[in-house]
Length: 430
Image (tube, rainbow, N blue to C red; front, side, top):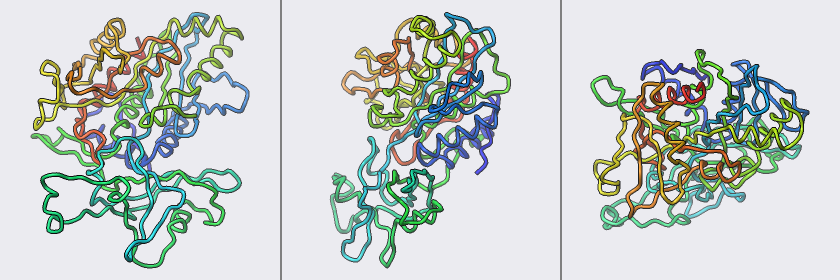
C-alpha cells in the first residue's frame, strides 16, 4: 500500500492518517524495514549493500534484517565532525509461529505459537489475527508475507469458569493456542500462496501474529485526542523519527545526521540486527574511513563529538491506576514527549543529555514531560543504555506516552507524535 508521509507541520488528522498507513503496512519488523527502505529510496537516498565496497554516498541507507540505518552527510564534513543519531526499534510484542506450525485438538486445527517479547497476554484473546513475516526459500530468497485474518484465540465463557471476571489465570502454552480451521487445510500452503512461492520450496519462516483491526482516531471535541492501534511500541518513534528526518524543510548543520531503527529490542537486542549488534558501529566506522581515511583516530574523534536520542514509547498515567506512577511525575496523553530518567541506568539520560533534549524542545516550541518510575514499580529499559555501552556516545532516552502499552491495541495522542517529530527535527538540525 502507498504510505503518505506528512510533514512536521501537519495537523493531527493528516499525521494520524500517515501513521495509520505505516502501521497497517508494517505488521512485522521486516515489513517496517522494507517500507522504510522504499521511503528512503523515494526521497533520493541510495542503498548501500553491506557486502559491497563503501560507495561514499552522502545521502544513503543500509538495510539489515528488520533494521534500517540512513544518513545525511554535510559537504563540510572533516575530521572531528560529529554525528547526531536518532534511534528506535521496529519490533513489537507478539506471538511467533513455531517450526512445527500446526496441531489438532478435539476437532480444531490450531497454530502452534510461542510468546515474543512481553505482550499483555489477555489483550490478544478473541481477536481477528493474521499472520505476517518472512518466508525464506531453499535458494535463500526472502519473501514478505501478510495474510488477512486467519486465526483467533478463543476464551472460555464465564458460564464455564465463574471466576474469570475476578481472577484470570491463563497458561501461555495451553490458553494462547489459536484455532484456524475445523476442516481440511495446510497452513503453510496458505502462507506460500500469500508469499507468492511454492510451499515445497519453503526452507524456513519467521512468522508472527498481528491484529487485523484498522487503526482509529477519536476523542475530544475534534475527535483527535486518541489514536488506537497495535504495534505503537515502537512504531510511534520510528514514524516520528522518519517524518523528522525526511521533512522537506530540514536543515543540514555541521554534524552528520543518522536515522537508526533496530530490530529485536523486545527480546533484548542481542541479535544480528539489534542495537547490541554491530550494525550501527559498522556503518559509522565505514563512514569515517570513507570520509577521513583509515585508522581509529578519525572514528574515535567522530564518536567523541556525537550524541544519540533513543526514542521509545513510555507509560502515560492510567487514571484507573494512578498509584502505580510516581506522585510527582504523572505524564498524560497529549502533554508532550517524555524525557525518561532512571537512577539505576535503565535509561541513559543524564544532566548534559537532558539539557541537550530541552534545547531541542525549546527550539521546536514543544512541551516535555519528565517521567521517573514509582520506586516500588521498576521500569523497563530501552536501546539507550545499549548504545552507550556499545559506542560510548552520550545518549538521552525519550518517547511518546502510551496507554495499554504492550497490549494488542495501544493508545497514543497524535499531538504527542507531532511534537516528537518537531523535537527530533530540531535536534538533528542543532
